[in-house]
Image: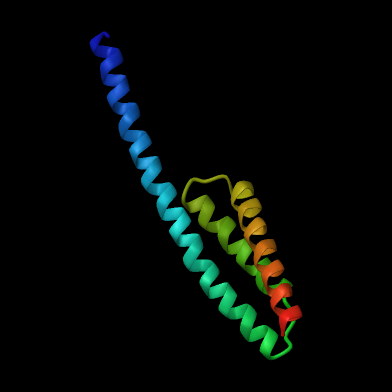
Length: 100
């Protein structure tokens, strides 16, 4: 291999190691987030509150879009990502309501 290819391979390896660490952070962060949303779901079920809160969801999406802009991330992607998470949370809350 040429020195240029060797150097590129080293740089690539470094980026991939960073990506792997960040993926782990994302997974553990989502796990922690879902622990809290599950607690919210139990609380809502115990007090017969609705599984979703559209006003809060809208506020959170707007907040995340703003954070995305600050982080130089596509705000539309951030919005889709949060909407996906919110839908999963609502499914969990609805399941808790049925179990209650």
